[in-house]
Length: 258
Image (cartoon, rainbow, N blue to C red; front, side, top):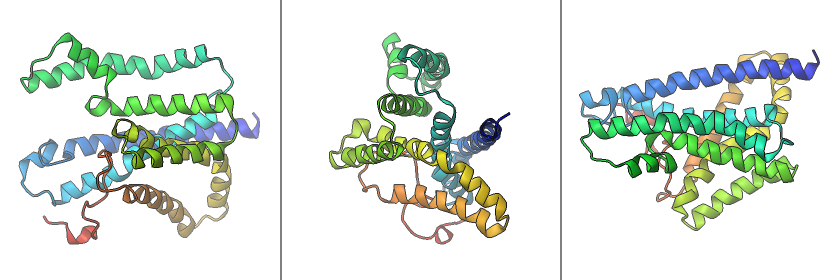
């Protein structure tokens, strides 16, 4: 095995572990409920309870983590020189089929439990347009397709990151609500693609300086980037999937009430 192969094998294990932890956090977040009308939060009235804070904390980073990890996986393992046919065939099996298989039953179940009438066209629309939790697959499909099309024609990773940031800024300025969410989450995917070539250096730095301070800096830096991205959004931005620990920009310890 070459050193590059060994590194990729280790990276694959790390990514699976991170995805597993993120999935567990997603489950915990949904059990708690992202507002007082869902999950465990239905049993009490205060939106500032400890459970609510835990859910908000999870929502601060769990989805950005998914997209950063997905960007790293694309950069490290995806073949950029394959044909369009092979690419679309691969993504159809990995992304489109799960969307087609799981979204309609979920939509039907939700409609029945809420006593909401629906038609066959509504079922089709639930797949075409992002429906509740399946917005994630729509954004992932977009981010993966955008990255593939870019690297199929260009090589500069820095330019790719710059274009990704620019598209989001432009969507904010133009108040392009239809695509704003896509460009926002694509920032994390693009960041994952960008940092991939530095991961070996980061790993070497952490291992050679095996102390708590060095290992604490990287997670803090990642959280700082996520919080900064959210904090830079205007108040009326049409991105409501990611929330900060508190929505009032005040220290969380002043809002926690049991």
